Image (cartoon, rainbow, N blue to C red):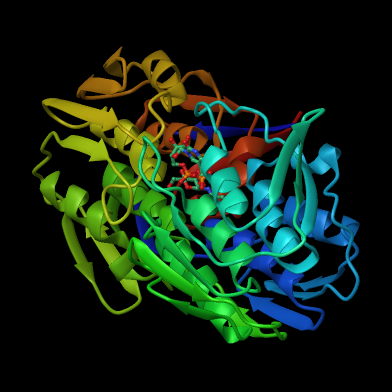
Length: 419
Ligand code: EPZ
């Protein structure tokens, strides 16, 4: 298990290239199960979560080849049972349910465990599968899906915390080969859902409305192989923009899509930072002003829950009192206790964090927990006095490709230590 040592107080300057989106690549790789023909997926990030997905595909019988950022998958003959050992490590494994049901009319995947950001039910996924005609059984910790035929249906996927991103993807993947038309109301509007729909359309699916809350899927007989390049990772991009804000003179992120970063760019602007962008880059630089914020995480295009922890780190060092409200995963505050160990002044009350900015944070040994909370600790450490030791760095490696090397290239001083 590696740990990283962040020597704080250095200022960042320069450019960083953003990788392909983890949360787009995962369902797109699962979607390759829907055809017997070869698919070529480009700009796949080198992350442990991606490795888990490729292992699941291999164990389902797919031929999988990876050469740097390009993954080729051929699912000529497949099994329908995903192995518990891998599935338990990554909740997103549930997104193989839709394609397995869609193609083989059967699937057996272990129920995802809980995780530190809170309860992660999949009731909306299962509701959608049942609406399409699948028999859903939960037995021995596994989800069993069986169907003689899948028929198009009208399904509302909105839950009490809003739409479901992977649920929308799962139902799309189950519906593309169903008989007739499926309408998803209350669909997630995230760019990753649009990217998945675009890949399915390239495979021959008939989908309209992706990116809105109303998606229509006209079932087709079969899908063919296709090539696709994954969209840039908007959360990696946002994380590096916050790095530039918290410790930067002037940082530019390249190979990104500013249209996916609207809420993040707006929040940084409201906090007093100068932002400029081109078609595929965004530049952030401090201009002396540093204002507190009132932020609330909501589904896309609102402020993303996956950027909440990173902004808590930034706001801990800003003037005044900020309030951050988490509505998507109300318990997603594992980073707060660790930030307080670094001297942050934060009061947590239910799903609201009230943050009184302090001049300086101080380095301390802290514990990474979930992916984004861990990134937040790295960001806070960039600005802290002294050295911050971050343990359990594997959490960060799940979603960030070489974050320490990329930050060091901007001027940070981060050491990765094997323990
Ligand atoms: C995706 O998770 C992302 N993961 C998450 O990113 C992200 O935080 C989340 O969407 C929200 O944007 C991937 O894409 C791999 P949801 P997902 O279903 O699809 C509730 C990261 O850091 N819900 O949109 O699993 C759920 O509890 C990860 O990269 C139900 O109630 O999230 C939550 O409160 C973390 N029933 C809300 O909906 C369901 O059946 C949104 O969850 C499904 C979800």
